[in-house]
Length: 225
Image (cartoon, rainbow, N blue to C red; front, side, top):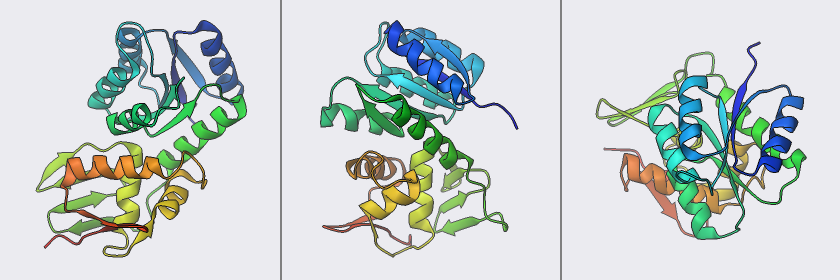
């Protein structure tokens, strides 16, 4: 089995070394970058399976790093932030991050989040190579690709998985907690506000009317006419 590669982007050498050591102990190949430009360069060369990304960085910040890496290819992103500020966290998730950890965090929690994100990306397609067409929306789970009106739509791993969960039961309402548990693999991954942020990103990319909010409950995928 191919060894998974993770890029750690952190300007605090002590934290970077600790994170890299824990991830190597978990069996991953690890690259480390200490600033924004270096992170983008290493990501383009090493093509990591997942990026552990600090928000505050020299050169340019983690949000810009996330944008540039995601523009090149869909990559799982776990953001690290020193501030538990909801606005900052939602901006990070809207930029393309899949999950976040607030410093200080335990090595065990970091490892658990990384494994959960990679399991999400690794989920194989059902035996029939599940695909779905809803109006002009085409979802190919085997290739993890989405098209709308024959144009490819770039989704992050979390956005794709949320769309799949909703698309499997068009019109059915799924609660935020249910979506969080099914996509993240554990019910308290980051709180239900992360679901709201990813749904907002899906609406921005696929159209505001595609996903209906059921106030006090959750979301449902509207069947395009």
